Image (tube, rainbow, N blue to C red; front, side):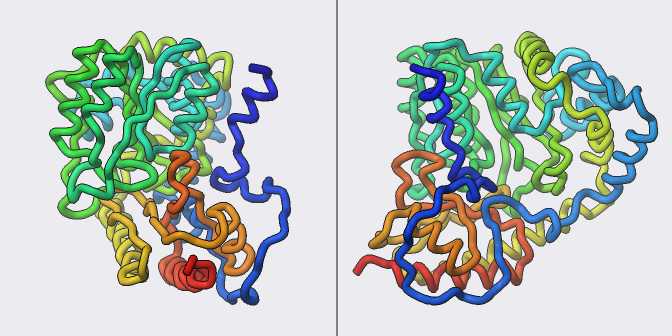
Length: 403
């Protein structure tokens, strides 16, 4: 493979926020532009849901402190690591040693990159779920791994993720050394059941495989949903990394804050990779971790309740539309919407939607090549604007529905 071919596989034209990179093309426009406030469902709106109270003030205090906060050790500043480790221990129920088991990273994307880079050698088989976070497959390819897809029948079960555990075990039997998955799942928003988590942990231990568990949205769970932290189970594999951060539910995306915690040997490798990749999680930004798990009383509950209202309002718009469906989100801010067959391609429809309705969504093909009739939305938006945008989206859908 040439260097050009390697990077061609990392295509980012359809990734969230990258739509302006797409080359212009003639589109079959069947109506005039629908009026309404533009809504970008490819990511959350931090103007609609403001960051954690006090985040800017602690950031500014870090800037004022100067060098001590700017030039931390590569893993992060000692007192911040201690706060993060203590908070995660209480949150997950797992013992987390700040000196051995934690690293602060430039966003959870940075944590994913470091964790995969610290575990994948060229030719290694890596199991990933389909559908799951769009960057997972790109990182496997970048590091030279061989991808093994594990299907998730999220649309056929009422509880749990519907992961094909038999397929996962077959992947381990065939030599998969690493399994990566998000819980709650991105893009679907489903939460793995206790039985699924326990089975995944037991299989990884049996086959001596490494687990990377992305728990980015594990604080944003809706009423009645039971969550199981894999890292806190009695039977876990020797090599386990959990990834989490305050960027989403807490609306702190702009600070690029991520955390990885788990097996000391892997954390050490991640530190060495970070030392040559980015040195550290941005020093001044690290100060903002002080607000994490330290929000005002009732703030997190109100934040989740607000997102539940938006989810329910959008689901109400989808109900009853022939050929359109989505599983109600159990955790996080995503809906993975299935649409009927169209007489244009999915990618053409998404461009038409952006041009005629001012609505941006992420194509399902970012989460697996087979998802040609799905798109993902992040409903962490202004409620009224989001609902109006879905109305315009459905109106455009009717114009391009195949009859």
